[in-house]
Image 1 (tube, rainbow, N blue to C red):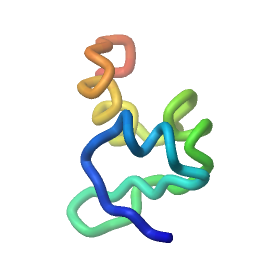
Image 2: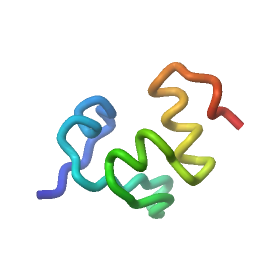
Image 3: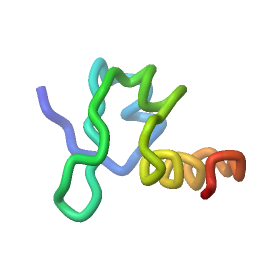
Length: 59
């Protein structure tokens, strides 16, 4: 099943795989654990930093 959401806590809880997109382009695709715990791309890191309220990832 494919679910499109901006609710990150929901996505984190239910997803096996996450595809992070920005302006219609796939930025990063991996397991939910990898995306949420160790995002590789700076755009994903920036987005998740806002979701977490965390400034460690903001570049």
